[in-house]
Length: 73
Image 1 (cartoon, rainbow, N blue to C red):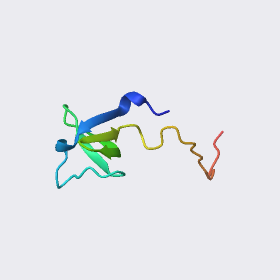
Image 2 (tube, helix red, strand yellow; image 1 turned 90 degrees about the vertical axis):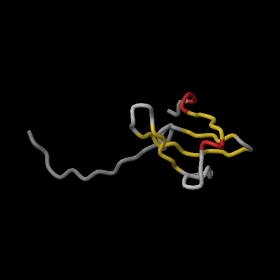
Image 3 (cartoon, one colour; image 1 turned 180 degrees about the vertical axis):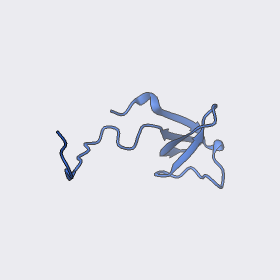
Image 4 (cartoon, rainbow, N blue to C red; image 1 turned 45 degrees about the vertical axis):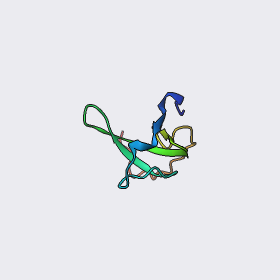
C-alpha cells in the first residue's frame, strides 16, 4: 500500500532545465549514500513540487499470467 510518509514537498528551485518539474515525470534523486531513488512528480503548485517516492504499483491490483513449463517431483 502507498505510504504517505513517502510523499515529499520540495522547493521548485531544486529543479533545473535538465530536470524540469513536470507532472507525470519520473526523476532520479541521489540519496546521501550515492544510490538513486526514482520519484514521480504528482503536482506542481507555485514554488512547491509534490514528489511521490512510493513504488508505482503500490496499492494497485497486480495479476500475473504464467505458463507452467515443467513440474518436478
